[in-house]
Image 1 (cartoon, rainbow, N blue to C red):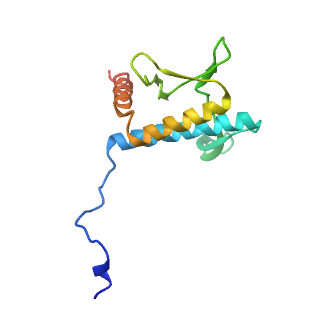
Image 2: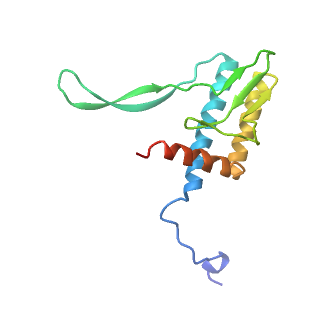
Image 3: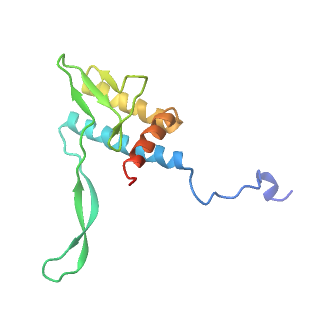
Length: 146
């Protein structure tokens, strides 16, 4: 018996590009990861900094160089009048409606906020918010048309 006969061989090639909805899910998932880390760091009282490279022009030589700078991350949550924490999921500048007419999730505390964000992240990765992502993406695209 040959060694290759122990494997399951299939006639599938690697796709040249990822489907658009998968790219959008990954984008939202990475933003949710940043929000989760930001919430955890605020609970622990530690700073959370994501750095990125920016191209800046050197004043003396006039040449462009790459400089590592901190990325500004704004929290998606806020505290209501009754002391509850609400979080709204954002895709670009759009707020996603998680259910019809309900764009926010209300939780009791900051610890519950992390759990809620992780739950939403799993839902995004499973494709449960694909319709909302498509709507937000189409709305963002329409803002760029002339």
